[in-house]
Amino acid sequence: MKKLRLFLKLHGLKVAVGLFFLGVFLMAAFFMKSGLENYFQLESFSRRQLSAMMGFFLIINLFAVFIQIPLFFGMHYYFLQGGGMAKMGKESMALAKVNVKWDQVIGMADAKREAWELVKLLKDRSLLKVIGGKIIKGTIMFGPPGCGKTYLAKAIATECGMPIISATGSDFIGMFVGQGAAQMKALFKQARETAKIEGGCLIFIDEIDSFARPRQQDQGFGGTLSNNATINQFLTEMDGMRQAENNIVIIAATNATEEDLDSAIMRAGRFDRKIYVTKPNLEERKKLFDFYLSRVESEKNIDTSLLARKALWFSPSDIDNMVREAGLIALRENRKQISTKDLSGAYDRVTFGMKSNITMSDAEKLWTAYHEAGHAVIAYLMDTTRDVIKATIIPHKGSLGFISQRPKEELHNTNKENLLAQIKVSLASYAAEKMKFGTTSAGVGGGRGSDFDTAMRIAHTMVWQYGMGKTGLIGDFHATERVISETTRAKLDDDVQDLLQSCMREVESVLTKHRALLDRFASELVKKEELEYDEILKIFTEYGLESSVRDDLKS
Image (cartoon, rainbow, N blue to C red; front, side, top):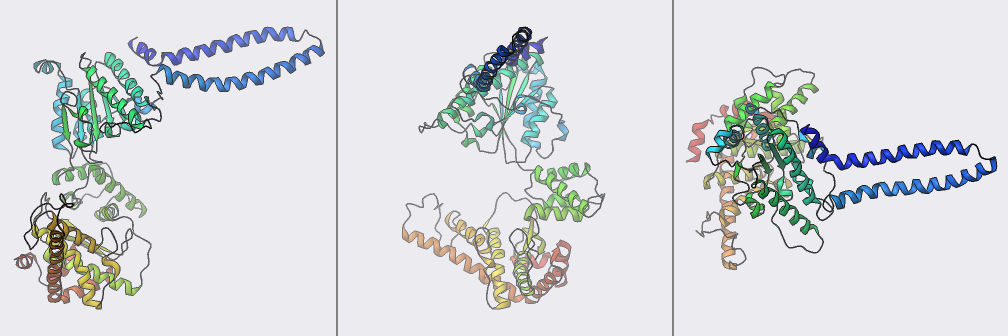
């Protein structure tokens, strides 16, 4: 009976309109039956005259009906629902069906600990009384995309056994002023009615930053005014939840930062709990690979620890995508199980894109091989924080070749030596080409992400922001760029070029010393086109270049 009353409250007007039109249709049918009996009693001339008149009025009435029906419903939504209320999609207003178990949420241990306190309060009413009887009304999750914020919200709902109404921030943006506010009002109305029946209700709003950006002064076109009205209605609804204990909790998620949201939304008393979701660490990535591989057919000898080290900074969705891509590779080769090779190919495709259909000449292959060999030799010998795990001269996503490096450990800060090593690796291609061919190619430059671009950006940051230039100028000069003198600017630019030149001299010295290794690596690339970690390690080991040599070079 309660659910029937809820249905009538939410959809009563629509039912009434439908019954009205049904009654009109039945009455019209009754009178038409009576009229037909009299019609056939008339003379033939009178019947023809009456038929012509009826046809004319029928056309007029049909035309009027086709205009009145959309006009009626448009006026209904605009006036009766608060000025511009457009129906939200069924998925956004309907109760979401979720069945995500708590132990299925992997890769976000810290966020789960924070969320578990909310779960306990929702499940244990006696615990709620201990803290004063007021439940946390708002929880917002910050974090990069693909890290499981929506998944965690569904797990909270499943664990609590409470219904959840799911919406996205874009649902509250419309073309009419007041439309978003009306939609917000309708959302909370449904949540309150659901909470009365079910004993509680969760509202999940994904991408809340779509409407929750800081309020601004209207520019005269109505868009800003509508956005402000939506935020005001949201704040009103949240404050109204405090006036009565109806066990409604709002869970929001966003990829934006806290500073990007309206300060009134973020103040204490509204979103009381802030959960910061980060990308998974090494142990969590291993668990994610174990979880996703357990759901598909895969070989038993796959080393998920190695995969976890390789997939540094991957989000859970990236790992899921990598496993699914590996499954597609196995399927294309008519195999029923995913292998380590499939996962390696999937990693390359996710990270570097699909292989290109570019066909290079033998001369281009040789040039590209020396270009990548320069990167690989200097990376192995001078970058002590990262391993070279792959080298290829097969074109990918606009690049004729690349080397792939994997950090040996997760570093959350960097120092001058690490930054210099990255510059040297970037400049190594230029030095190797010049050493082999006596000239260089356009492959070292050419836009964002090119070798020269990477080297210059790192050197510029070191000097302008980190105080690592030879002249000893310190400070973040980007913060005061408009007020620094031309003399200071010239010194900073000289420091940048000095870093690049000194790194280049070191790179040329190391490549000259290990010229035989450079030639061997390039020839192997020309022959095989792609070298994996074991093959790369074998080449360097043949030349006696193991970890002890790398330590000596570093000193």
